[in-house]
Length: 98
Image (cartoon, rainbow, N blue to C red; front, side):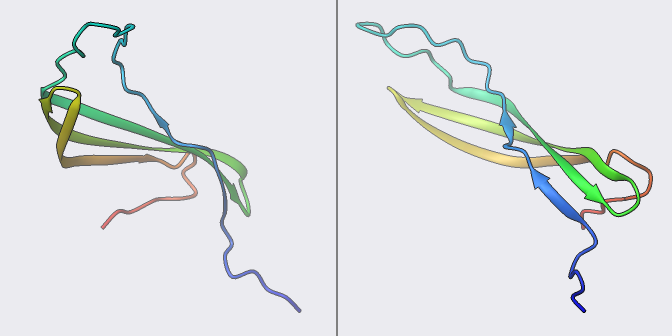
């Protein structure tokens, strides 16, 4: 008899990283100055397949504080982790991040 190693299967949905920067056509113009302090928010959606609840939409939101240094068109990013929020989509599951 075959047994499953995990009762929880997860179907991954590609992460969505939203970076809101308006880019124009730079033929002879300099690139925009992006240097400074930024907040980077990543929302990672997925669908978990739970034994009792079935398919449950979940999401993780990760926030980072980012300092950007710019030298011409070259960007250097230094980031610091701020927090992660996990929405499990059901009260049957609780995610704990140590």
